[in-house]
Image 1 (cartoon, rainbow, N blue to C red):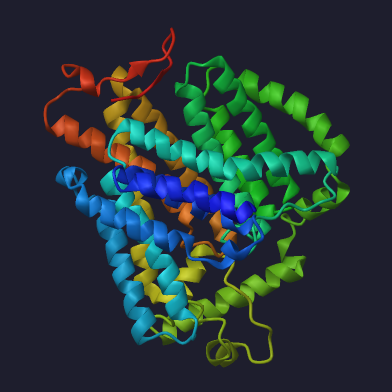
Image 2: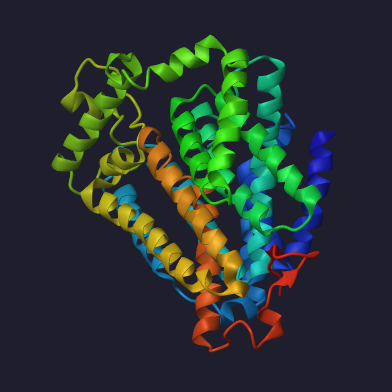
Length: 439
């Protein structure tokens, strides 16, 4: 029965996609992040739902050329295209793993979604719509995980949906940590007190859910995200003092000793057996990159033909690092391209900060750029201990900032000034200085 309800729900929005391609993007992102078909525990669990949505969305974009008129290749999209081209070469020419084509198919679809986002999500309303879709999708796991952690007093470890990129608790913790800067973005720009209160509650439960994953990398990512958010608010020192005064004693009373013991291992990681496994994986990735300049393809380093060449008799491990993951799979050229992709995001957000900082009508873009930069910092730090280099969550979040950068840059170049044209001015919700953009 749940399968039937989900099919009806998806059918309605897929049919609407034909007229409004942006709905297809939202639906694609929603299914990718929330994985509702994995929750109905029926025949839909293994069906290519997103493939169907993708085909309809691509067709809708081609049939509605209005969005293509304003499309432009950003530096980010150019380097993403180069990266896709490179890992296509390593997959079909130099790959070692028989599963490499399957991994290529999954990651190519992610990058296709990102490319379509930059085409269709091209104004503030659509950008904020995508942000809401991301936060509602991942917010479900934040709210559910926070409640479960509280109810079980931390006894039940939080995991994501099975057979998804968030199934691993460490991956889920990082994804939840990356939502915090965007929750703060909405908090800074929404006027409704009810919505603002809801965002604060969501932020609290998300933080508790991250703790409930028992992920050390998640703890580091959470610390960076919350620290960045606190320093963006007025009276930030007061917020920090209040937060420490309230959460410190609560943590000591309710956080399980098991969690505190696990977090304490961060300071003596060299004595942790799992850390030694990661060092082995990093060593294999480094040596494989030296011996195979064009990489070994997706999941290549963990194949016996590669792993046993350097550490025979030692159990193979995943890289547990976005940097060594890309290095071992795509070689040094692939890693360099990947780092340029990340740098292009940082640079684009720097431009957006400059364009929005001193202009009241672009303040939303400034706040969004800060959120994306914080997300990038969280990903670059937390991802240093996780194999999530091709994370759809991260790239979707980045897409919101890239789309905002393209939108603002296009209108600045057109000489609109964002003041003379009322269609480009943000609409005030309620009274006060808080605004949310609309067109």
